[in-house]
Length: 48
Image 1 (tube, rainbow, N blue to C red):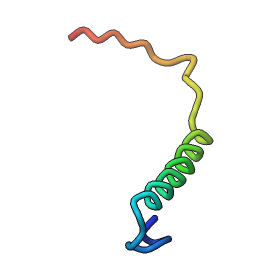
Image 2 (image 1 turned 60 degrees about the vertical axis):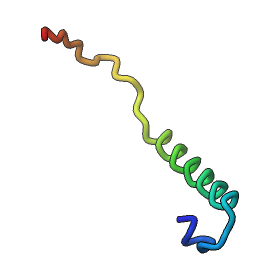
Image 3 (image 1 turned 180 degrees about the horizontal axis):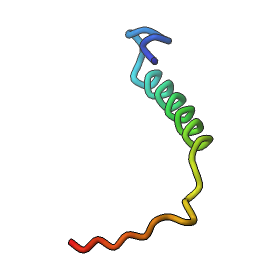
Image 4 (image 1 turned 90 degrees about the vertical axis):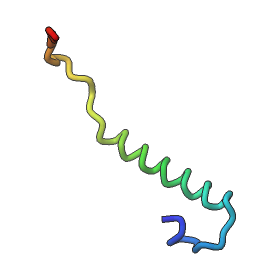
């Protein structure tokens, strides 16, 4: 996405800043859709 936004001739700092912003947006999206821990989760006993 960064190359699309600013091209390929920018500095490392610009790409890092854009990547940080993108990852922050991704994290915010994941936090919106996360589920709470299942209170009645199955309890398995593995006899291996």
